[in-house]
Image 1: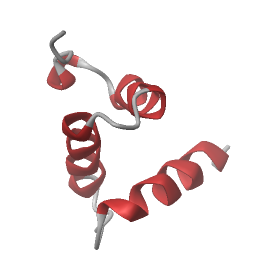
Image 2: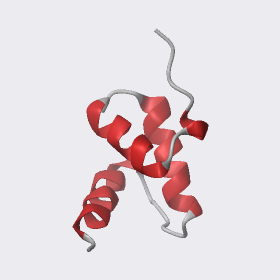
Image 3: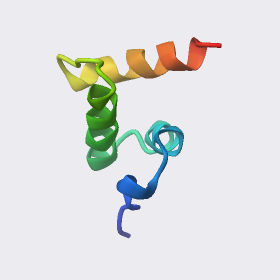
Image 4: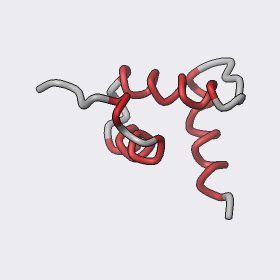
Length: 59
């Protein structure tokens, strides 16, 4: 099975995909790249869940 095209997904779709497919390293890296493109600097991929959770809690 091939991975979806992460470039065509919205960030919201990609975030949902990562939450459903936590072992998909390519998806995790694609999401981390998008997060960093918004100005949030990640020191490691371990910070990604925290960033996602903060985003979810915003009104």
